[in-house]
Image 1 (cartoon, rainbow, N blue to C red):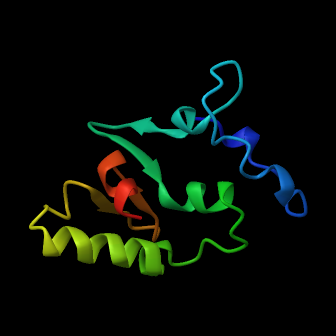
Image 2 (image 1 turned 120 degrees about the vertical axis):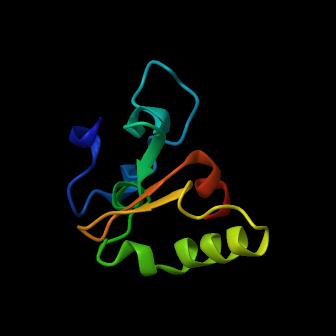
Length: 99
């Protein structure tokens, strides 16, 4: 995991620097984790996108819209959204496409 790349508060101009296709630099793919399935932590992605707070990430509009879309399409929520006891959400690549 690449947690050391996340910029301190006040340096948001470089927060999106991981969304590129240059393999020689830290990129979005390197933030994925694998624990039986490939996933990204919602709170970490929110920090990369410049959100100041990651409290209650599972209740954010993008996550809720993604869950609604999956429900509408009969896509299993539990296979794509893994709600953690600490309030974070692990998202599969498929779930990220809906967020």
